[in-house]
Image (cartoon, one colour):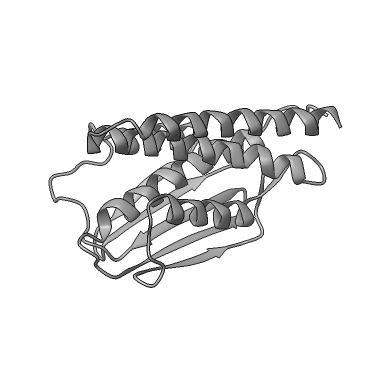
Length: 203
């Protein structure tokens, strides 16, 4: 009961931070600065959802990542005002359970990559499709996100860029002892292979 209450309070505090960022953003006129506020708000929300999911879980140890991804996608569509009739999303995720140490960095890199697709892949009301896949092979997990949008500039090296979002993705993938590959042949497709972090049981 104590651990549930802790996760619940952490989630509430993160929601307060998210709300404060939202209130502050109402006084920001510069579009670039406003985007920074919104992206920070979504990052905080993605972590808050982990604690909310744990609070509602049966064992307080594992997170149903399929439900988490579905909630994350829904929240980002609302945050960026995406019309689901224009951008279709397909989620193919196994019944994957992850511990909190793995779920938080994974939730954050999924948030960054999906945000990138929603913001940049389909300019000027262009229609498109995004697919998200997650499945396990032996002791590893394979995550892919693919959009059929306009793609990256040819000269962009996603592993060596000034873009904060992609810098975060690379750092977070390293955090879960993973690898990341980019396929530019049809839009953008990122493939991340990672494993669940192990730690001593806390309860």
